[in-house]
Image (tube, rainbow, N blue to C red; front, side):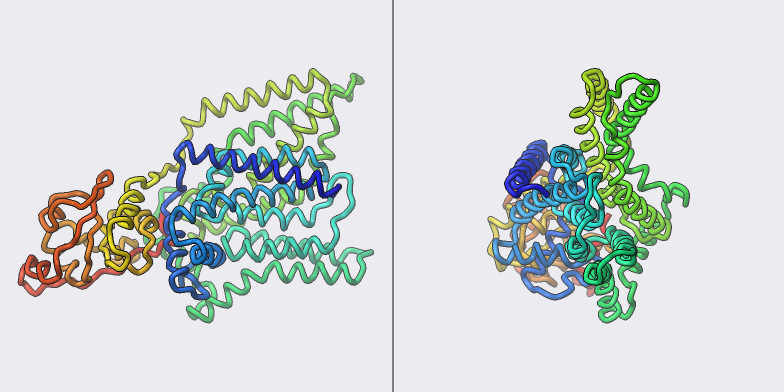
Length: 529
């Protein structure tokens, strides 16, 4: 890498550009990918309130909760802090992508162009502000893979760089499961590099140590599950049981095998169309050069070769995820999240090679490439609204009523929260009172169905009396008004009520002796759809 000053300036530019993209995404109203975003905040708040080694005791990996929980303890366990942390992690992830791009390309301007594109395509932009760890995990995975790449102009990467890559993989594999195949591939490549002729013994030892360290995260998690749950692959069993409880899907084995590649093309068509346009124009330029005319394009094929190794790792990752999906061991929604490493690599390649083409091509070639990229952008703007995607309600009302309850109720007052769907997690995240808010029922599909206590005044009276709730959060409906009167505050369809006293609640319940036991506190959010 050249001098430190240009590198620092480039990092500052990358950070500013990513911050601007993130600010634009927030200004357009994006707040969350799914209810998982709020579930992660709630679980991190619980860890901040009572830290433990395994924050959730479920299939969710611990590292994001350690980080967010520690910051919650220092800054306060609020949804605003969680979103500020997500914003900062998005900017830090862009810096890691730029570092990886420098290692892959060996070219400052090409790396910068690729990084700016990688930070701006829609899924990267959205995940840069969401309270989920997909972007940072993909960036760490990219650092690991890039640490083993030899750039076009050489030299081969120093063996010590692989140790940094292995450390990045430890963090990534303790955050999400998608990097686990990357860790396997990294370990194999590091061992192969160590076995090459001509390596010094010290260099071989560093590469072998990097290979072992890369697998430390998965090995530690498997060992923990064996100790804590009596089954080494307990986490896989939980996810599979959740998917099974959701019922059989309408997609066959073949559709599942291609679900991840299809999601990539469906969600980010402009990246694929841009790469095709770039390849076609380069091919025509090559044909023109072969016929004896002046060569309008620089040799892009040589510049693209360093992406072969990261691309192969990303393809291996997607193949492993596809096999897991067939066996019910993959995420239940938004499959494109798991392919973010491949999408970032594709964006880096498109940005890198486009920058080289504009820099070294003739005026005619630059016009052709610029026109092609503009046509791709226009086609994306036109066709995107017609592509089938998973959409999500940002839970604006649920967040608003949680914030209102945090302002209007004493911190020690227990609250009973109506559970309609997983939107109650947004209310709990905004309320920020671990242990003080109690979901009305479980809607985990693995649990027996439970009718909501908010459906009739008598059931609600029994539930309030059994819990000793001081306040209620639920939809503004006649059964709740009949029990608790007019709401203290409303936000959209949701309201906040002071609960009648326990004695009054018991008197309101029918004396039939049929007091229903309290349902479980809520779903296991790690598999929440």
